Image (cartoon, rainbow, N blue to C red):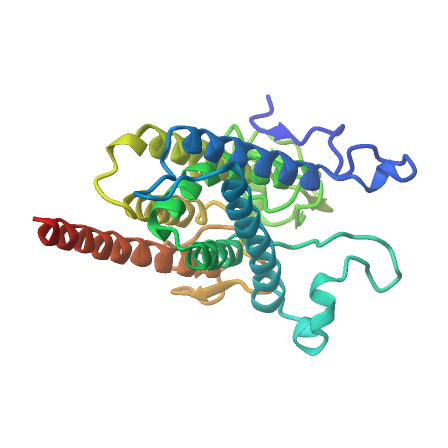
Length: 326
């Protein structure tokens, strides 16, 4: 009896595969629309609750839309720039930076802006929100707190988009919810470790040839823990925030922690591998050591540290203002 899940054959990156013009529409792009729409609806609800108002400053819907749009534009720029200049190892984007936002391949086929980095989007979006708040003289921590409540639920759709694209899958596993992704690396059936995992997963394999083993559906792990669960924590704690900046710090720490753990189940980029490796020749498709650290995990550690620093500094500043007002 198979103890794994086959990736659904009806799922394709294109929503309408083989249909002229409509074939260019991809699930991943549609998920971005869902993500931004969801995030905007949430921040609009916070606006209705009066959480963006400050003494002497009444927030309008135009303010809300301007703030949101600025953050999203900076987020997309940061996500794309970070993906091409940090995660791409060919060096082509450093030599030809105009290709960063060029949506066609070398044959002139439309590809869209394939390749976006969460951490780059985080930095870009943060800079965009700070820029808007400084320009419009609004309390940055209060406005960024509102945006961080809105982000995780939208982020859920992004990871679902990765799943529908059959990309960013996890490492090899024999767990019963492991999934065989069509584009995943295949392994020789003659290898003993391949036979062992196939046996544990109830998979019938040939004596020779290549085998596509089950993988952790890490995109769904991220959608659930970094998206839905983190959003629930932020949403239901929003009225108990002790000071401006607390929610932003909680989001940063929460996301960094969840992503750091899930990275042990997600396969690192093949061209980057591990940034820190206790076992230098360890394969990226198997988790053989907790001390083999990926690029994503290093960035998550920086996020956690940054969140702790923000929480400390914002808390101390709030206490200072309270003493000053006495």
